[in-house]
Image (cartoon, rainbow, N blue to C red; front, side, top):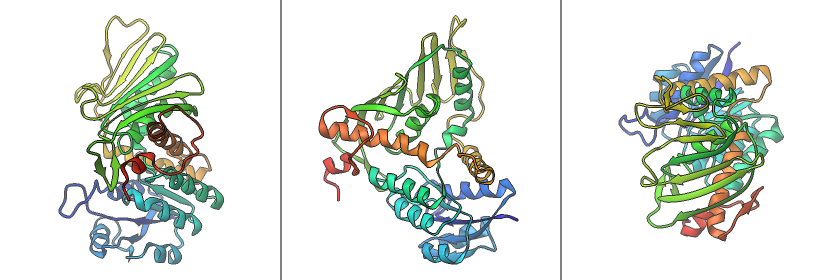
Length: 344
């Protein structure tokens, strides 16, 4: 018997006519189909033509809805995928959780505010629903190989992680989540940071800083330092610094993983053909959540893990607003960045 899957937010494939994003729902669909354990039976999109075009590719027998709540009420779904802009995530996830589907897979970032992010996780837990967010880098080959090097002690004991990317909210949620992955899911203790409020950029309807800096201390003593902005540095990746060496993930377009650790006289480049991005990671994430649902284990992309990274993002913004260190857990529920910008 196949798991019944419904998708909210069909959209158009990336770079196709009418596309407003990356078309991630299409990659979700490919992932479900490749498991051989799922059937896409229902699609919901406010633009019926988008759902019809999606059905032609992924689910010719799927029922199409323009109201996702009607789909939730009628279809007896096992899994719901949500691939909409962030401001829609919380109501959709909470509605799906209250409809008592078995699992929800939602795109990242979690939500525009920390309060909404917490409420999604709470709703899933209250209803016994498995909740995941698509931090798919956890399934990338250079990240997995880098974690293996860490676990094998190639650079000794991890002490510091450095991250460079465009912004903390949209891209940074990946890098902070990966820092938590490399640091064995250790909770953060405190955060301090600053952001530049000039000329904010809008990403999927949410304002993001042009430049920022944040430092996080985890409870095991490891620190994370993040610089954001296109002038933050020449690299857009992660560096793990240990007592006996360094691991770099994402050096440039040719070098995806390198290490200089115990016994290395110079950098050792680890061959990798996939790179830092790729649709195959989304498919692996879907396969993992399906397996987790069927076996009862925690999925790699669990809401609990996503919330840890999300808390660091909003704590960094709160530090900029309050001009001081923020001890966790974070108590504010809004987005300090949005508040400082005065965005309604």
